[in-house]
Image (cartoon, rainbow, N blue to C red; front, side, top):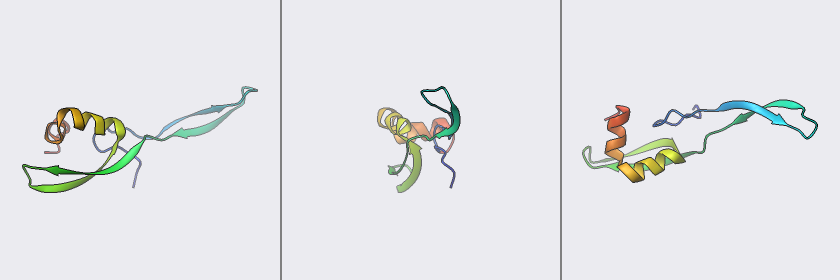
Length: 74
């Protein structure tokens, strides 16, 4: 499965490792993805979502149902 947040759409970015001698080699920056279960009261079921930690903070602030409605998944 791809390393993509299901809520925010964050995905792997590409950049450079820069050495002390200013040599540049390609590298990847991965998002901090976690798999988490949430209970959705309106559906009365648990849903497992792969999301970035920033999305977990947003869900803690707004609530799972509000965030899913924003994304269009509910």
